[in-house]
Structure formats: C-alpha cells, structure tokens
Image (cartoon, rainbow over all chains, first blue to last red; front, side, top):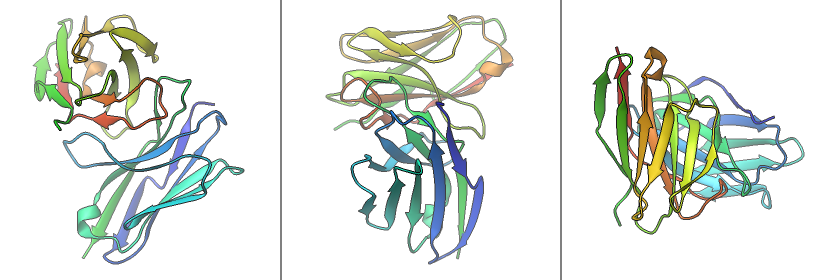
Length: 112
Length: 114
C-alpha cells in the first residue's frame, strides 16, 4: 500500500517533443506529490510538486496532472531539450508520515 | 542561502568496518532525513531526525544509526558494513517534520564496500 509505481522505465524523445512520465499510488493518505530530477552523480533536485486540492500545476515547461479518483499523477515536459536528459523520480508523502516514497525512476534522453 | 552539504563525497570501506557520513542542513531547516539509493533505484528512506530526536525509521537494521546536533546538522553511522550497503547515501533537509513539505537533497556520499 506504500508503493508508488512509475512508468516508463526509460524514455527517448526528440528535441522539442513532449515527455510524459506516469505514476500511480495506493495510499489515499498521501497528500503531497513531488517530482525530482537527478543528474548522474548528483542528488535529486525538486522540480515541481502538487497537492490533491488541484488537478494541474504548471511551472514553465513542466506540468503535473493529478487524478485523485484514479490515484495517478503525471509529469509533462513540454518542448523537451537535451539539457532535460536526466532521471526523473515521482514521490508521495503525507503530514503524518515521516518519509517520501519514491518511484523507481524514469531515465529520459532527449536527442537533438 | 547555503544548500544541503554532505561529506565525504566518496568513501571506500571493507566489509565489517564502520562508517560515519555527515550532513549540514539548509539554513532554517530543523528536519533531516537520510535515504539510501542503490544503483538504478529510487531513494529508500532510512530515518528522519527532528530537533535532535529520531522522528521515524524505514526498514533498515539497527546497525544504521544517526544523530542530529543542536545546529540541525546530522550524522549517519553504519556498523558492520556489508557488500549490499554500497550505495549513494542522500541527506535531505526540510523546514519541518513530516513528509508533506519540500525536502532539499544534498549531493550524496557514494559508499563502496569491498
């Protein structure tokens, strides 16, 4: 019940295309859903996060779509750039838990 | 504003040894969480410290222990190292306890156990 399932495992996108990464969770107590970007040899960096009171949040080229009834959320990267090539992790947490539960990661490669 | 820093960057130990990893939290943050990230995997929660007390623990054995100091910096200690302990150890600080607020990660310590 604590799992966060992430797909796809890897993604190849042409420059300028849209990258879409999906996550699903089971625990309805989760109320905080961040996305992290991680480059090789670096720690994860918070990209964007959403709470269940909204269905979408946009920051620049990055958008989170959230479907509470389906217990799913996704990251959309518009106009993908080679510099976006990294591993992306979704995660879930709540106030009364101590930990973020991470997905297994998606390795994104954007080719020119 | 200084971000989360960790030391050392890399560490090589042999099986059975003990290791101490260090983390300085971001200014204004009183909560530190430690995660283990095996190669190709997502981070796995080890424990969280809030105001010098352990606030929660993941599925890790007691040989993983920690401390938080009055300045909110933290240490992760691992005794009796095993080969499977080889991983990137990440420290994350946040402005309050719980897992519903922003956690800022440090660059990690890469531990290799031979």
